[in-house]
Figure 1 (cartoon, rainbow, N blue to C red):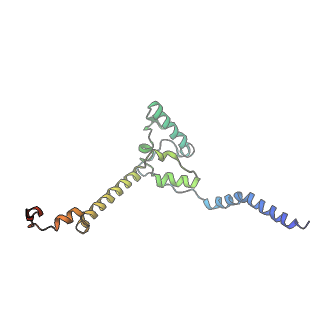
Figure 2 (figure 1 turned 45 degrees about the vertical axis):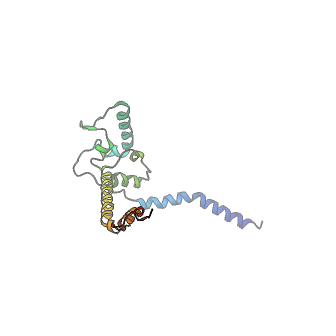
Length: 177
């Protein structure tokens, strides 16, 4: 019975490892505390549904919209207040809400990974920003090439013709018969 200390210490380590997820999540729950402050659109007062419905059902709504548009060609959504909206994540939802300041903040707080919406849809602001950066990068490369052209080495054929004297005669003309 000398192994009693080893057995109890092994059980203690096993129980600690077994309950580690509980202790980890308990600490994270207090750190999360308050929900994020989402930036609501300044130019719109109404959404396609009330805020409580959107918090709980927005993903189901987006999936239903996708099915309606792709399978049936139905692009009109009649909202709870009688307004008609276009069923479009990019044009309807992102027309008011910013992906980084609205969607991403809430999903990060909730611990939601994904969503896979962005595999097909582009955030208009991010897309415009990426396009502007690509144009700027291309302009910088073009300006660099134009400014550095006099300093860059020329191809070998240019070197050969540039240094050849113009008054030399052809080697065949100097030969004696």
